[in-house]
Length: 199
Image (cartoon, rainbow, N blue to C red):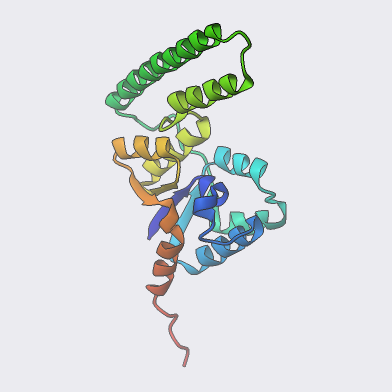
């Protein structure tokens, strides 16, 4: 049986969630229906589930969601992470800090040349700094929990988050492109043998 660890992006990223519907409630209902019909197990770390709850109202469907999605955290104290992953992460963070500083220096020089600092300059600085510091980098406990749970369960990670996918790939964790999840679920449903006929 295939196992999937889900990230919030399945339900909140418009490019991914659109495969299940146009409205958040429809997205959740379609996912839940397909999950019940498919021969697969779905998991979500508690931290990710709580994060999803801050983005979507889960109250009306919470029991249905928890019926088909196992909510559990990875066993952090028993997992072993290869040291190379940690060293690569440190190198990546240092590189990003240096890039962020260069961007800040560049904008400071531009601001010094301007008699009045235009608000667009600050906005541009924030956008470039955020891009340099966060894109493609695991930067939250929720992201780490999902990657670690996928590793622990030998499950497929389903996320549109570039940083999570990059880390999971480095760690040898199976990945499923988030935009393909609905079709994969449908394929798993189609392959389910029909129940035996009574007689």
